[in-house]
Length: 467
Image: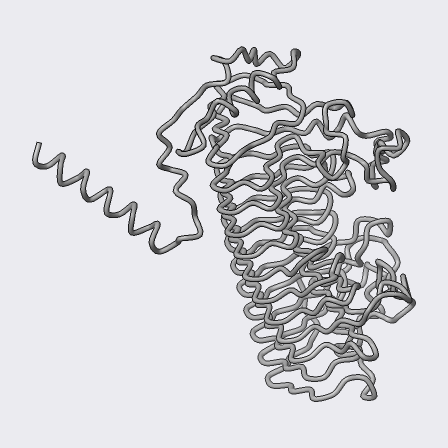
């Protein structure tokens, strides 16, 4: 009995110590209420809608203490379900929450089209080891190995544009959000959307989107602060991790220990960039066979300051010109989206311990009145090899700005920069004579002195390499 008491006290002390070290993580583990959706009539056969039973289980949770809503093994077809404060969805292994594919399954307002939606809530989360599935392939109008043509509900008048499809999971104006140990699969549009939230933890999450589907982003962090993403596996068609600012800034975002593959940008800031991005860290990330590695598309007047990328391994390749990007391992651009857009600035970027093998070079481009400043590349190893047959000789400013522009290939292209440092940078060029595109790999640094100032180069190495 004494030993049991000591062990119990020790576990409690460790628990409260962990909470004190990371106060942003809510006390979700202290759930004292457990309800099961089958007790409220959920069938879980994947055919009949279980929305009413699931929502009834959620609504039965008390407002004063944490509550787990448990899904036993089964497939639960549902329209939008609404979380509330102190509720955790516990989707167990063998259980799948399956989003409906009809417009009547979602609220009237298109900005609330999610399979799982929490609004103005605190201490909410999703876990359990099971699956949330958006049935994204049911929204494909025409399948294509290049890029699928998707259904758009704009024909109903419910929304505008060609991206009128439901997202998978959304937390809007929430605090103390935790998403962990869950599989998010086949979103029809964005997968996990964090909007105007504070103190969010996302860890041990696997995201699988169709590789040929556009706009099925992995994680979109929008106007949210104090966010941690770690140990996530993201394999999807569009941008994998995408901070953006539409109604407020993004500050204090940390992303670590993730694996990413995408037909677009693995990590992309923007292109929605009306407000600032500040104090972002990306560390220990593997990016595999993606159309673009690390990207900045700053277009709307917001500024970027103090962003670190470290210990990142990147491989990029061309997929098709219909996707933004030219297989750049690093892409930093700031230019007005259109004539009505304000100028932006990007400053204090650090790229440290970066290894990349790619089909194109690094592209760093500010604009008149919106220069890039204080960029540092430390311990960077770049290897360039063309192994697809897409034509080179273009730089991609999309969206907006100048579009696609003819430009000879180079290891690093620089425009409108004030302050850039290279320290221990290695650049190697494939001598694969069987690939005709390699004939233009002859320029390590491409810039005009009239637009690029204050360059520091220390231990810069450039040469051919043989595999």
